[in-house]
Length: 525
Ligand code: HEM
Image (cartoon, rainbow, N blue to C red; front, side):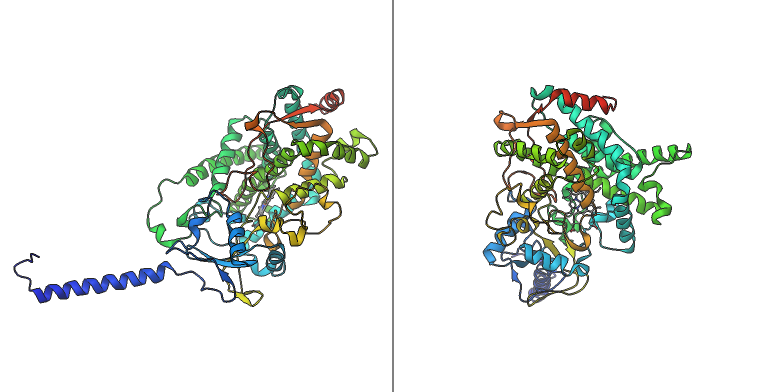
Protein backbone atom coordinates (compact mmCIF):
# COMPACT_ATOMS: atom_id res chain seq x y z
CA UNK A 1 0.00 0.00 0.00
CA UNK A 2 1.37 3.47 -0.91
CA UNK A 3 1.33 6.07 1.86
CA UNK A 4 2.07 9.79 1.57
CA UNK A 5 5.80 10.30 2.37
CA UNK A 6 5.19 12.43 5.47
CA UNK A 7 2.71 10.00 7.17
CA UNK A 8 4.13 7.45 9.58
CA UNK A 9 2.69 3.94 9.54
CA UNK A 10 1.70 4.15 13.28
CA UNK A 11 -0.17 7.43 12.79
CA UNK A 12 -1.92 6.00 9.73
CA UNK A 13 -3.20 3.05 11.73
CA UNK A 14 -4.28 5.43 14.52
CA UNK A 15 -6.36 7.37 11.99
CA UNK A 16 -7.62 4.17 10.48
CA UNK A 17 -8.63 2.67 13.86
CA UNK A 18 -10.30 5.90 14.86
CA UNK A 19 -12.34 5.97 11.65
CA UNK A 20 -13.17 2.28 12.06
CA UNK A 21 -14.35 2.78 15.65
CA UNK A 22 -16.45 5.76 14.57
CA UNK A 23 -17.99 3.70 11.77
CA UNK A 24 -18.75 0.81 14.14
CA UNK A 25 -20.35 3.19 16.67
CA UNK A 26 -22.37 4.82 13.88
CA UNK A 27 -23.51 1.38 12.66
CA UNK A 28 -24.49 0.32 16.19
CA UNK A 29 -26.46 3.55 16.69
CA UNK A 30 -28.10 3.07 13.29
CA UNK A 31 -28.89 -0.57 14.12
CA UNK A 32 -30.50 0.44 17.44
CA UNK A 33 -32.31 3.31 15.76
CA UNK A 34 -33.45 1.10 12.88
CA UNK A 35 -35.33 -1.18 15.27
CA UNK A 36 -36.62 1.58 17.53
CA UNK A 37 -40.30 2.35 17.94
CA UNK A 38 -42.10 5.27 19.58
CA UNK A 39 -43.45 2.85 22.22
CA UNK A 40 -41.45 -0.16 23.52
CA UNK A 41 -42.52 -3.75 22.81
CA UNK A 42 -45.72 -4.53 24.74
CA UNK A 43 -45.57 -7.50 27.10
CA UNK A 44 -48.26 -10.24 26.76
CA UNK A 45 -49.10 -9.38 23.13
CA UNK A 46 -47.78 -11.59 20.35
CA UNK A 47 -45.59 -9.82 17.84
CA UNK A 48 -45.48 -10.24 14.05
CA UNK A 49 -42.04 -11.70 13.17
CA UNK A 50 -39.80 -10.69 10.27
CA UNK A 51 -39.41 -7.01 11.04
CA UNK A 52 -36.93 -5.25 8.74
CA UNK A 53 -34.62 -2.47 9.91
CA UNK A 54 -36.41 0.90 9.80
CA UNK A 55 -39.49 -0.51 8.01
CA UNK A 56 -40.63 -3.02 10.61
CA UNK A 57 -43.59 -4.90 9.07
CA UNK A 58 -44.46 -2.16 6.58
CA UNK A 59 -42.99 -3.93 3.57
CA UNK A 60 -45.84 -6.48 3.42
CA UNK A 61 -48.56 -3.82 3.58
CA UNK A 62 -49.89 -1.00 1.38
CA UNK A 63 -51.06 -3.43 -1.33
CA UNK A 64 -47.49 -4.59 -2.02
CA UNK A 65 -48.65 -8.24 -1.85
CA UNK A 66 -51.80 -7.58 -3.91
CA UNK A 67 -53.98 -7.88 -0.80
CA UNK A 68 -55.41 -5.13 1.35
CA UNK A 69 -53.88 -4.60 4.80
CA UNK A 70 -56.87 -6.20 6.55
CA UNK A 71 -56.36 -9.48 4.67
CA UNK A 72 -52.68 -9.50 5.60
CA UNK A 73 -53.56 -8.76 9.26
CA UNK A 74 -55.98 -11.72 9.24
CA UNK A 75 -53.22 -14.02 7.93
CA UNK A 76 -50.84 -12.80 10.65
CA UNK A 77 -53.51 -13.21 13.34
CA UNK A 78 -54.12 -16.80 12.16
CA UNK A 79 -50.37 -17.58 12.05
CA UNK A 80 -49.85 -16.19 15.54
CA UNK A 81 -53.08 -17.70 16.90
CA UNK A 82 -53.90 -14.30 18.42
CA UNK A 83 -57.01 -12.09 18.35
CA UNK A 84 -54.87 -9.05 19.00
CA UNK A 85 -51.22 -8.69 18.00
CA UNK A 86 -48.55 -6.01 17.83
CA UNK A 87 -46.23 -5.00 15.00
CA UNK A 88 -44.00 -2.12 14.01
CA UNK A 89 -44.91 0.23 11.15
CA UNK A 90 -41.70 2.19 10.66
CA UNK A 91 -41.19 3.69 14.11
CA UNK A 92 -44.86 3.29 15.13
CA UNK A 93 -45.70 0.56 17.63
CA UNK A 94 -49.05 -0.65 16.34
CA UNK A 95 -51.66 -2.99 17.78
CA UNK A 96 -54.25 -4.68 15.54
CA UNK A 97 -57.56 -6.11 16.82
CA UNK A 98 -58.88 -8.91 14.58
CA UNK A 99 -62.11 -10.24 16.08
CA UNK A 100 -65.47 -8.61 16.69
CA UNK A 101 -65.19 -9.16 20.45
CA UNK A 102 -61.68 -7.70 20.75
CA UNK A 103 -62.64 -4.69 18.60
CA UNK A 104 -65.72 -4.06 20.75
CA UNK A 105 -63.65 -4.43 23.91
CA UNK A 106 -61.04 -1.90 22.78
CA UNK A 107 -62.93 0.57 20.60
CA UNK A 108 -66.26 0.65 22.44
CA UNK A 109 -65.31 -0.55 25.93
CA UNK A 110 -62.37 1.88 26.18
CA UNK A 111 -63.66 4.44 23.69
CA UNK A 112 -62.32 7.55 25.43
CA UNK A 113 -58.79 6.22 25.49
CA UNK A 114 -58.95 5.60 21.72
CA UNK A 115 -60.15 9.02 20.64
CA UNK A 116 -56.91 10.19 19.00
CA UNK A 117 -55.57 9.55 15.53
CA UNK A 118 -51.87 8.96 14.85
CA UNK A 119 -50.11 11.92 13.31
CA UNK A 120 -49.40 11.37 9.60
CA UNK A 121 -46.45 13.63 8.75
CA UNK A 122 -46.74 15.42 5.43
CA UNK A 123 -50.51 15.09 5.43
CA UNK A 124 -52.35 17.36 7.85
CA UNK A 125 -49.40 19.78 7.90
CA UNK A 126 -49.45 20.04 4.10
CA UNK A 127 -53.12 19.46 3.34
CA UNK A 128 -54.66 21.47 6.14
CA UNK A 129 -57.29 20.64 8.70
CA UNK A 130 -58.93 17.24 8.17
CA UNK A 131 -61.29 15.75 10.75
CA UNK A 132 -60.67 12.10 10.06
CA UNK A 133 -56.89 12.41 9.73
CA UNK A 134 -56.22 14.48 12.87
CA UNK A 135 -55.72 13.81 16.56
CA UNK A 136 -58.63 15.01 18.74
CA UNK A 137 -57.70 18.63 19.48
CA UNK A 138 -60.23 21.23 20.68
CA UNK A 139 -60.43 22.51 17.12
CA UNK A 140 -61.17 19.03 15.69
CA UNK A 141 -63.78 18.51 18.40
CA UNK A 142 -65.57 21.71 17.30
CA UNK A 143 -65.40 20.67 13.63
CA UNK A 144 -66.74 17.19 14.45
CA UNK A 145 -69.63 18.77 16.39
CA UNK A 146 -70.41 21.07 13.44
CA UNK A 147 -70.35 18.08 11.06
CA UNK A 148 -72.63 16.10 13.36
CA UNK A 149 -75.05 19.02 13.62
CA UNK A 150 -75.12 19.40 9.83
CA UNK A 151 -75.71 15.65 9.38
CA UNK A 152 -78.15 15.29 12.29
CA UNK A 153 -81.80 14.20 11.88
CA UNK A 154 -83.31 17.64 12.57
CA UNK A 155 -81.53 18.91 9.42
CA UNK A 156 -82.75 16.11 7.14
CA UNK A 157 -86.03 17.69 5.97
CA UNK A 158 -83.87 20.42 4.40
CA UNK A 159 -82.03 17.76 2.38
CA UNK A 160 -85.02 15.87 0.99
CA UNK A 161 -85.63 18.53 -1.66
CA UNK A 162 -82.09 17.82 -2.92
CA UNK A 163 -81.96 14.06 -2.60
CA UNK A 164 -85.34 13.41 -4.18
CA UNK A 165 -84.63 15.25 -7.47
CA UNK A 166 -81.08 13.81 -7.57
CA UNK A 167 -82.49 10.31 -7.30
CA UNK A 168 -85.03 11.13 -10.05
CA UNK A 169 -82.15 12.25 -12.28
CA UNK A 170 -80.42 8.95 -11.54
CA UNK A 171 -83.49 6.91 -12.50
CA UNK A 172 -84.12 9.11 -15.53
CA UNK A 173 -80.57 8.56 -16.81
CA UNK A 174 -80.91 4.82 -16.38
CA UNK A 175 -84.21 4.76 -18.29
CA UNK A 176 -83.12 7.00 -21.14
CA UNK A 177 -79.37 6.45 -21.55
CA UNK A 178 -79.89 2.76 -20.80
CA UNK A 179 -82.72 2.66 -23.39
CA UNK A 180 -84.91 0.81 -20.91
CA UNK A 181 -82.46 -2.02 -20.43
CA UNK A 182 -81.21 -2.38 -23.98
CA UNK A 183 -77.89 -0.69 -23.19
CA UNK A 184 -75.97 -1.99 -20.16
CA UNK A 185 -75.06 0.85 -17.80
CA UNK A 186 -72.39 1.54 -15.21
CA UNK A 187 -74.43 3.11 -12.43
CA UNK A 188 -71.49 4.26 -10.25
CA UNK A 189 -71.03 7.86 -11.52
CA UNK A 190 -74.78 8.48 -11.08
CA UNK A 191 -74.78 7.16 -7.52
CA UNK A 192 -71.73 9.24 -6.66
CA UNK A 193 -73.42 12.32 -8.07
CA UNK A 194 -76.43 11.96 -5.75
CA UNK A 195 -74.17 12.04 -2.68
CA UNK A 196 -71.84 14.64 -4.12
CA UNK A 197 -74.73 17.01 -4.84
CA UNK A 198 -75.94 16.67 -1.28
CA UNK A 199 -72.49 17.28 0.18
CA UNK A 200 -71.83 20.31 -2.03
CA UNK A 201 -75.10 21.71 -0.84
CA UNK A 202 -74.60 21.11 2.86
CA UNK A 203 -71.02 22.44 2.78
CA UNK A 204 -71.05 25.42 0.37
CA UNK A 205 -74.76 25.63 -0.50
CA UNK A 206 -73.87 24.70 -4.09
CA UNK A 207 -75.22 22.10 -6.45
CA UNK A 208 -73.85 20.39 -9.53
CA UNK A 209 -76.23 18.60 -11.78
CA UNK A 210 -74.25 16.93 -14.50
CA UNK A 211 -72.29 13.72 -13.99
CA UNK A 212 -70.01 14.66 -16.91
CA UNK A 213 -69.48 18.23 -15.64
CA UNK A 214 -65.73 19.00 -15.80
CA UNK A 215 -65.79 20.89 -12.48
CA UNK A 216 -67.27 17.83 -10.75
CA UNK A 217 -64.95 15.39 -12.48
CA UNK A 218 -61.74 17.24 -11.64
CA UNK A 219 -62.81 17.80 -8.01
CA UNK A 220 -63.73 14.12 -7.68
CA UNK A 221 -60.38 13.10 -9.22
CA UNK A 222 -58.49 15.31 -6.76
CA UNK A 223 -60.47 13.88 -3.85
CA UNK A 224 -59.70 10.34 -5.00
CA UNK A 225 -55.97 11.09 -5.29
CA UNK A 226 -55.89 12.40 -1.71
CA UNK A 227 -57.89 9.41 -0.41
CA UNK A 228 -55.29 7.05 -1.86
CA UNK A 229 -52.69 7.95 0.76
CA UNK A 230 -54.80 9.19 3.71
CA UNK A 231 -54.03 6.89 6.67
CA UNK A 232 -52.68 4.25 4.30
CA UNK A 233 -49.42 2.30 4.52
CA UNK A 234 -48.38 3.02 0.95
CA UNK A 235 -45.70 5.62 1.60
CA UNK A 236 -42.68 4.59 3.71
CA UNK A 237 -41.87 8.23 4.48
CA UNK A 238 -45.09 8.53 6.53
CA UNK A 239 -43.72 5.98 9.00
CA UNK A 240 -39.93 6.11 8.72
CA UNK A 241 -38.46 9.39 10.00
CA UNK A 242 -35.12 8.80 8.23
CA UNK A 243 -36.91 8.52 4.87
CA UNK A 244 -38.17 12.07 5.34
CA UNK A 245 -34.61 13.41 5.03
CA UNK A 246 -34.89 12.70 1.31
CA UNK A 247 -36.79 15.62 -0.21
CA UNK A 248 -40.15 14.57 -1.57
CA UNK A 249 -40.51 14.88 -5.33
CA UNK A 250 -43.50 16.89 -6.50
CA UNK A 251 -46.12 14.85 -4.75
CA UNK A 252 -49.31 13.84 -6.54
CA UNK A 253 -51.16 14.49 -3.30
CA UNK A 254 -49.97 18.07 -3.05
CA UNK A 255 -50.83 18.66 -6.69
CA UNK A 256 -54.29 17.18 -5.99
CA UNK A 257 -54.68 19.39 -2.94
CA UNK A 258 -54.00 22.47 -5.08
CA UNK A 259 -56.76 21.40 -7.46
CA UNK A 260 -59.12 20.63 -4.58
CA UNK A 261 -58.43 23.99 -2.95
CA UNK A 262 -58.93 25.91 -6.20
CA UNK A 263 -62.35 24.26 -6.61
CA UNK A 264 -63.35 24.99 -3.03
CA UNK A 265 -62.32 28.64 -3.53
CA UNK A 266 -64.64 28.82 -6.55
CA UNK A 267 -67.49 27.34 -4.51
CA UNK A 268 -66.85 29.70 -1.60
CA UNK A 269 -66.67 32.85 -3.69
CA UNK A 270 -69.92 31.87 -5.47
CA UNK A 271 -71.52 31.45 -2.06
CA UNK A 272 -70.22 34.82 -0.81
CA UNK A 273 -71.65 36.49 -3.92
CA UNK A 274 -75.08 34.99 -3.24
CA UNK A 275 -74.98 36.03 0.41
CA UNK A 276 -73.85 39.56 -0.57
CA UNK A 277 -76.83 39.66 -2.93
CA UNK A 278 -79.11 39.16 0.07
CA UNK A 279 -79.77 35.42 -0.32
CA UNK A 280 -80.12 33.36 2.85
CA UNK A 281 -78.07 30.20 2.18
CA UNK A 282 -78.19 27.61 4.94
CA UNK A 283 -74.98 25.56 4.86
CA UNK A 284 -71.89 24.87 6.96
CA UNK A 285 -69.89 27.66 5.32
CA UNK A 286 -72.46 30.25 6.47
CA UNK A 287 -72.88 28.79 9.95
CA UNK A 288 -69.85 30.47 11.54
CA UNK A 289 -72.02 31.98 14.27
CA UNK A 290 -73.94 28.80 15.11
CA UNK A 291 -70.92 26.56 15.59
CA UNK A 292 -68.31 29.14 16.71
CA UNK A 293 -65.85 27.94 14.11
CA UNK A 294 -62.96 29.94 12.71
CA UNK A 295 -62.82 30.35 8.97
CA UNK A 296 -60.08 27.68 8.77
CA UNK A 297 -62.22 25.28 10.77
CA UNK A 298 -65.24 25.90 8.54
CA UNK A 299 -63.26 25.09 5.42
CA UNK A 300 -61.61 22.12 7.15
CA UNK A 301 -65.03 20.72 8.09
CA UNK A 302 -66.34 21.23 4.55
CA UNK A 303 -63.22 19.61 3.07
CA UNK A 304 -63.51 16.62 5.40
CA UNK A 305 -67.14 16.00 4.44
CA UNK A 306 -66.48 16.41 0.73
CA UNK A 307 -63.53 14.05 1.07
CA UNK A 308 -65.47 11.38 2.97
CA UNK A 309 -68.92 11.42 1.42
CA UNK A 310 -69.04 10.62 -2.30
CA UNK A 311 -66.90 7.45 -2.47
CA UNK A 312 -68.24 5.68 0.58
CA UNK A 313 -72.01 5.67 0.11
CA UNK A 314 -71.75 5.31 -3.66
CA UNK A 315 -69.41 2.30 -3.32
CA UNK A 316 -71.71 0.60 -0.81
CA UNK A 317 -74.88 1.06 -2.93
CA UNK A 318 -72.94 0.12 -6.08
CA UNK A 319 -71.81 -3.14 -4.48
CA UNK A 320 -75.35 -3.87 -3.27
CA UNK A 321 -76.64 -3.40 -6.83
CA UNK A 322 -73.79 -5.68 -8.01
CA UNK A 323 -75.15 -8.44 -5.78
CA UNK A 324 -78.79 -7.71 -6.71
CA UNK A 325 -78.12 -8.06 -10.43
CA UNK A 326 -76.10 -11.28 -10.00
CA UNK A 327 -78.05 -14.54 -10.55
CA UNK A 328 -78.62 -14.99 -6.79
CA UNK A 329 -79.65 -11.35 -6.35
CA UNK A 330 -82.02 -11.57 -9.32
CA UNK A 331 -83.85 -14.41 -7.52
CA UNK A 332 -84.12 -12.20 -4.42
CA UNK A 333 -85.45 -9.09 -6.21
CA UNK A 334 -89.15 -10.18 -6.32
CA UNK A 335 -89.14 -10.79 -2.54
CA UNK A 336 -87.59 -7.37 -1.96
CA UNK A 337 -90.07 -5.66 -4.26
CA UNK A 338 -92.96 -7.39 -2.48
CA UNK A 339 -91.58 -6.43 0.97
CA UNK A 340 -91.55 -2.77 -0.09
CA UNK A 341 -95.13 -2.96 -1.36
CA UNK A 342 -96.26 -4.81 1.81
CA UNK A 343 -94.78 -2.08 4.01
CA UNK A 344 -97.02 0.45 2.19
CA UNK A 345 -100.19 -1.67 1.86
CA UNK A 346 -99.48 -2.14 -1.83
CA UNK A 347 -99.34 1.63 -2.50
CA UNK A 348 -96.39 1.96 -4.82
CA UNK A 349 -96.70 5.76 -5.10
CA UNK A 350 -96.53 6.16 -1.32
CA UNK A 351 -93.51 3.83 -1.07
CA UNK A 352 -91.75 5.93 -3.70
CA UNK A 353 -92.68 9.24 -2.05
CA UNK A 354 -91.63 8.20 1.46
CA UNK A 355 -88.34 6.53 0.47
CA UNK A 356 -86.10 9.31 1.86
CA UNK A 357 -88.52 10.43 4.58
CA UNK A 358 -88.78 7.25 6.65
CA UNK A 359 -87.27 3.79 6.96
CA UNK A 360 -90.15 1.33 7.17
CA UNK A 361 -89.00 -1.68 5.13
CA UNK A 362 -87.09 -4.10 7.40
CA UNK A 363 -85.89 -6.24 4.48
CA UNK A 364 -84.25 -3.22 2.82
CA UNK A 365 -82.63 -2.29 6.15
CA UNK A 366 -81.36 -5.84 6.51
CA UNK A 367 -80.06 -5.80 2.92
CA UNK A 368 -77.98 -2.63 3.27
CA UNK A 369 -76.60 -3.71 6.65
CA UNK A 370 -75.58 -7.06 5.19
CA UNK A 371 -73.99 -5.28 2.23
CA UNK A 372 -71.92 -3.09 4.56
CA UNK A 373 -70.97 -6.12 6.68
CA UNK A 374 -70.13 -8.54 3.89
CA UNK A 375 -68.43 -6.07 1.55
CA UNK A 376 -66.35 -4.13 4.06
CA UNK A 377 -65.59 -1.02 2.01
CA UNK A 378 -63.46 0.34 4.88
CA UNK A 379 -61.51 -2.87 5.65
CA UNK A 380 -59.18 -1.51 8.31
CA UNK A 381 -61.15 1.48 9.55
CA UNK A 382 -59.10 4.61 10.20
CA UNK A 383 -56.24 4.16 12.67
CA UNK A 384 -56.53 5.44 16.23
CA UNK A 385 -53.97 6.37 18.83
CA UNK A 386 -54.26 5.79 22.58
CA UNK A 387 -54.51 8.85 24.85
CA UNK A 388 -53.69 6.80 27.97
CA UNK A 389 -52.81 3.22 28.91
CA UNK A 390 -55.36 0.70 27.65
CA UNK A 391 -55.66 -2.88 28.85
CA UNK A 392 -56.33 -5.98 26.81
CA UNK A 393 -56.19 -9.21 28.83
CA UNK A 394 -52.87 -9.08 30.65
CA UNK A 395 -51.38 -6.58 28.20
CA UNK A 396 -51.10 -2.87 28.94
CA UNK A 397 -51.06 -0.89 25.70
CA UNK A 398 -49.26 2.36 26.51
CA UNK A 399 -50.35 5.90 25.66
CA UNK A 400 -49.31 6.90 22.12
CA UNK A 401 -49.71 3.43 20.57
CA UNK A 402 -51.43 3.20 17.18
CA UNK A 403 -54.45 0.86 17.28
CA UNK A 404 -56.03 -0.53 14.11
CA UNK A 405 -59.41 -2.20 13.83
CA UNK A 406 -59.44 -5.07 11.34
CA UNK A 407 -63.05 -4.32 10.45
CA UNK A 408 -63.04 -6.81 7.58
CA UNK A 409 -62.08 -9.68 9.94
CA UNK A 410 -64.53 -8.50 12.62
CA UNK A 411 -67.32 -8.35 10.03
CA UNK A 412 -66.62 -11.93 8.94
CA UNK A 413 -66.08 -13.33 12.43
CA UNK A 414 -68.03 -16.63 12.91
CA UNK A 415 -68.03 -16.06 16.69
CA UNK A 416 -70.25 -13.01 16.09
CA UNK A 417 -72.20 -13.96 12.94
CA UNK A 418 -72.24 -17.76 13.06
CA UNK A 419 -70.97 -20.41 10.69
CA UNK A 420 -72.44 -18.61 7.66
CA UNK A 421 -70.45 -15.44 8.38
CA UNK A 422 -68.86 -15.67 4.95
CA UNK A 423 -72.17 -16.10 3.12
CA UNK A 424 -74.17 -13.11 1.87
CA UNK A 425 -77.51 -13.38 3.63
CA UNK A 426 -79.78 -10.40 2.87
CA UNK A 427 -82.21 -11.50 5.63
CA UNK A 428 -79.50 -11.70 8.34
CA UNK A 429 -80.46 -8.45 10.06
CA UNK A 430 -84.22 -9.02 10.15
CA UNK A 431 -83.75 -10.39 13.66
CA UNK A 432 -80.45 -8.80 14.67
CA UNK A 433 -81.15 -5.26 15.93
CA UNK A 434 -77.78 -4.73 17.60
CA UNK A 435 -76.60 -1.13 17.94
CA UNK A 436 -73.33 -2.26 16.33
CA UNK A 437 -74.49 -4.47 13.45
CA UNK A 438 -71.10 -4.28 11.69
CA UNK A 439 -67.84 -2.37 11.84
CA UNK A 440 -67.84 -0.66 8.45
CA UNK A 441 -68.61 2.74 10.00
CA UNK A 442 -65.94 2.17 12.66
CA UNK A 443 -66.97 2.11 16.32
CA UNK A 444 -66.73 4.14 19.51
CA UNK A 445 -65.52 7.69 19.99
CA UNK A 446 -64.55 8.47 16.37
CA UNK A 447 -67.27 6.43 14.66
CA UNK A 448 -68.38 7.94 11.35
CA UNK A 449 -70.59 10.95 12.16
CA UNK A 450 -72.68 10.25 9.05
CA UNK A 451 -73.95 6.75 9.99
CA UNK A 452 -77.64 7.64 10.20
CA UNK A 453 -77.85 9.79 7.08
CA UNK A 454 -75.76 7.31 5.07
CA UNK A 455 -78.09 4.47 6.09
CA UNK A 456 -81.11 6.52 5.09
CA UNK A 457 -79.65 7.43 1.71
CA UNK A 458 -78.75 3.80 1.04
CA UNK A 459 -82.20 2.61 2.01
CA UNK A 460 -83.94 5.25 -0.10
CA UNK A 461 -81.83 4.68 -3.22
CA UNK A 462 -82.37 0.93 -3.00
CA UNK A 463 -86.14 1.35 -2.56
CA UNK A 464 -86.41 3.65 -5.56
CA UNK A 465 -84.20 1.43 -7.73
CA UNK A 466 -86.16 -1.71 -6.87
CA UNK A 467 -89.54 0.00 -7.38
CA UNK A 468 -88.34 1.24 -10.74
CA UNK A 469 -86.34 -1.62 -12.23
CA UNK A 470 -85.60 -5.27 -12.68
CA UNK A 471 -81.81 -5.38 -12.68
CA UNK A 472 -79.72 -7.99 -14.48
CA UNK A 473 -75.99 -8.29 -14.99
CA UNK A 474 -74.53 -7.88 -18.46
CA UNK A 475 -73.67 -10.98 -20.45
CA UNK A 476 -70.29 -9.51 -21.39
CA UNK A 477 -67.96 -11.52 -19.19
CA UNK A 478 -65.42 -8.74 -18.61
CA UNK A 479 -68.14 -6.34 -17.35
CA UNK A 480 -69.99 -8.71 -15.00
CA UNK A 481 -70.06 -7.58 -11.34
CA UNK A 482 -67.77 -9.26 -8.84
CA UNK A 483 -69.69 -10.51 -5.80
CA UNK A 484 -66.74 -12.13 -4.05
CA UNK A 485 -66.42 -11.30 -0.36
CA UNK A 486 -62.85 -9.97 -0.75
CA UNK A 487 -62.21 -9.74 -4.49
CA UNK A 488 -65.09 -7.31 -5.16
CA UNK A 489 -62.43 -4.58 -5.05
CA UNK A 490 -59.08 -4.59 -6.76
CA UNK A 491 -57.83 -1.54 -4.89
CA UNK A 492 -55.61 -2.94 -2.14
CA UNK A 493 -53.56 0.02 -1.08
CA UNK A 494 -55.95 2.63 0.26
CA UNK A 495 -58.30 3.06 3.17
CA UNK A 496 -61.34 2.60 0.98
CA UNK A 497 -62.12 -0.36 -1.27
CA UNK A 498 -63.36 0.55 -4.71
CA UNK A 499 -65.74 -2.04 -6.18
CA UNK A 500 -64.74 -3.33 -9.61
CA UNK A 501 -66.64 -1.59 -12.40
CA UNK A 502 -69.50 -3.49 -13.99
CA UNK A 503 -72.52 -2.94 -16.23
CA UNK A 504 -76.10 -3.86 -15.59
CA UNK A 505 -79.40 -3.76 -17.51
CA UNK A 506 -82.12 -1.64 -15.89
CA UNK A 507 -85.51 -2.64 -17.25
CA UNK A 508 -88.58 -0.73 -16.01
CA UNK A 509 -90.91 -2.99 -13.99
CA UNK A 510 -93.85 -0.91 -15.12
CA UNK A 511 -92.82 1.49 -17.83
CA UNK A 512 -96.02 3.59 -17.78
CA UNK A 513 -95.90 4.03 -14.03
CA UNK A 514 -92.21 4.95 -14.11
CA UNK A 515 -92.55 7.48 -16.91
CA UNK A 516 -95.51 9.02 -15.05
CA UNK A 517 -93.36 9.29 -11.89
CA UNK A 518 -90.56 10.95 -13.82
CA UNK A 519 -93.05 13.28 -15.42
CA UNK A 520 -94.84 14.16 -12.15
CA UNK A 521 -91.59 15.02 -10.42
CA UNK A 522 -90.45 17.01 -13.45
CA UNK A 523 -87.00 18.12 -12.47
CA UNK A 524 -86.08 19.60 -15.79
CA UNK A 525 -85.66 16.19 -17.39
C1 HEM B 1 -71.47 4.06 3.63
C2 HEM B 1 -70.97 5.24 3.93
C3 HEM B 1 -69.82 5.50 4.87
C4 HEM B 1 -68.94 4.64 5.46
C5 HEM B 1 -68.87 3.12 5.32
C6 HEM B 1 -68.06 5.44 6.30
C7 HEM B 1 -67.03 4.91 7.09
C8 HEM B 1 -66.27 5.66 7.97
C9 HEM B 1 -65.25 5.11 8.86
C10 HEM B 1 -64.83 3.65 8.95
C11 HEM B 1 -64.74 6.14 9.57
C12 HEM B 1 -63.66 6.03 10.66
C13 HEM B 1 -64.39 5.68 11.96
C14 HEM B 1 -63.55 5.28 13.13
O1 HEM B 1 -62.41 5.73 13.29
O2 HEM B 1 -64.05 4.49 13.96
C15 HEM B 1 -65.41 7.35 9.13
C16 HEM B 1 -65.16 8.59 9.63
C17 HEM B 1 -65.71 9.75 9.11
N1 HEM B 1 -66.71 9.85 8.17
FE1 HEM B 1 -67.63 8.31 7.27
N2 HEM B 1 -68.41 6.75 6.19
C18 HEM B 1 -69.48 6.84 5.33
C19 HEM B 1 -70.14 7.99 4.94
C20 HEM B 1 -69.76 9.26 5.29
C21 HEM B 1 -70.38 10.47 4.79
C22 HEM B 1 -71.55 10.50 3.82
C23 HEM B 1 -69.74 11.52 5.38
C24 HEM B 1 -69.98 12.99 5.23
C25 HEM B 1 -71.08 13.56 4.77
C26 HEM B 1 -68.72 10.96 6.27
C27 HEM B 1 -67.88 11.71 7.05
C28 HEM B 1 -66.95 11.18 7.92
C29 HEM B 1 -66.09 11.99 8.76
C30 HEM B 1 -66.04 13.52 8.82
C31 HEM B 1 -65.31 11.09 9.52
C32 HEM B 1 -64.22 11.41 10.54
C33 HEM B 1 -64.76 11.30 11.95
C34 HEM B 1 -63.68 11.53 13.01
O3 HEM B 1 -62.51 11.25 12.74
O4 HEM B 1 -64.02 11.96 14.11
N3 HEM B 1 -68.77 9.60 6.17
N4 HEM B 1 -66.35 7.03 8.16
